[in-house]
Length: 359
Image 1 (cartoon, rainbow, N blue to C red):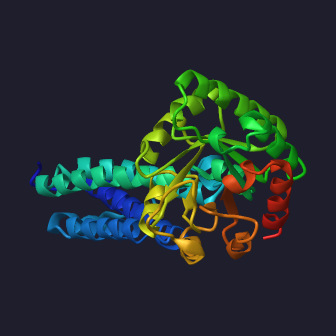
Image 2: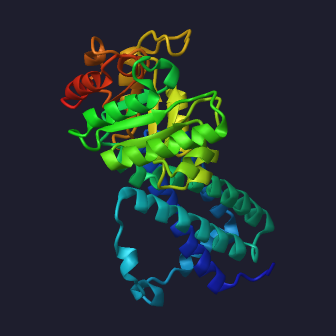
């Protein structure tokens, strides 16, 4: 640590302090205005205020006096990539990278002036890494969301609930045949809790191939390993299954991950963990799962209003042809027994698609 400040170091401190402030502001505004996420925006705001406290240290406060924008040779060095951002998500991801890079430079330069200030910057950098990762999970999921956004009917396929005259495979074919007139609007989830792994994988591969041929989305319940081996479009997890953030590590940014939620806080956490879509329920009483609390259509409207518009939501639980009209604002509805337990699942699928496609 030098007694006499290095003026070049002060210029670097000033430049990187500006970069950190700018990156934090971009990330905070995204969390606040795009995500409506109070927790994330509060953490980013706190980082901004802590940076201001560090930079108020007397030897650092004078760094602005050594700013020399006019003679800065770097201001004319631009690449084509710097001037292009494909989406708001790309803007936020770039800001996260700028934050971590600038905090590292700032920390190293401040070590020549104040060890205590450098240590605080180090802790801020680690916290910045966490926020950057969270925002990257959210913003980097845009491709999967775009693929799922067109889905209007989400059918859960469980053999034990299929009509005895059909079985799971004929039911799958009937549902896909009915959905062929609405390409991209149908998703089928293979939901089997008790099958041996080998048989589950066999069925997952059949589901994946047939869904792909029919232009439908294929989802495997609970099992990221089976989804990867079958090359399914994605998985769905509940609150007690493999955590969404861990599943995202295995599946990468391009696969679809859905998360079951009953409360708004769970939906917001699912988004932070990298969920592609949020399932909300139960909407109505259901025999498929025993639930003490019925969230209801009002809750679906609450979650829809709190989530960013580009994040798909799926209403689930006890949905029938008689009550699906109450979920017009949900976007997508998930149906199980009302379709697969019917003697004519193709007919019921067509009726559901006709109603939800007009929403």
